[in-house]
Image 1: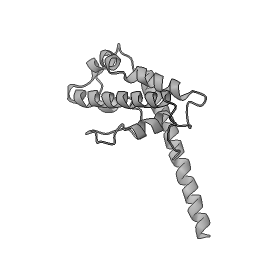
Image 2: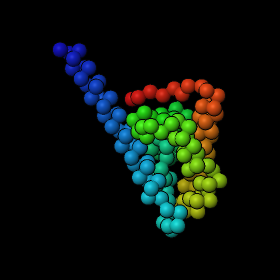
Image 3: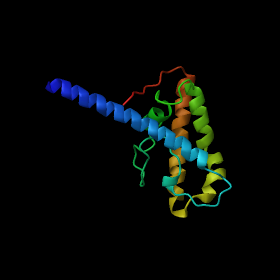
Image 4: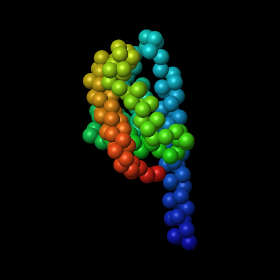
Amino acid sequence: MEREDSERRSRRKHAKERESVVEGWVAYETRWAQMRPSESTTLGFADLPWPCHPLPQLPLDSDALSKQTVSAFLLSPLHSIGKPRKQRLREALLLYHPDRFVSKWMGRVKKEDTRAVQEAVGRVARVLTALVEEGDQGEPLQYSLP
């Protein structure tokens, strides 16, 4: 009886974690869809869509936007079904390429968040580049479902 309860709790926990990942992906895509370079509203660090779930907080710690968190989020089998790994990474690279990001969005970022945003974009770009290079070498990606 106790074992069954434990298994049931474990299944519920995993189901909630999966649901959370999907909700995080929907929020991520919604944020990007709502972003308009022509708008004049200022953006804080927390207003920007970041490729991880849960979202990173300031000050950034060393685990924020790590290879593990970014790859687990972007390459999760719980969303973008049918979209190949390479396409997912390419789309993300187009969004977080430092030159593109700076020209499109940095003019709207709050001055007090500028450094943190630049650091975060740099981290994401480096992680994505590393993931693309891994894929190009045929190395399997390691990620797991929560």
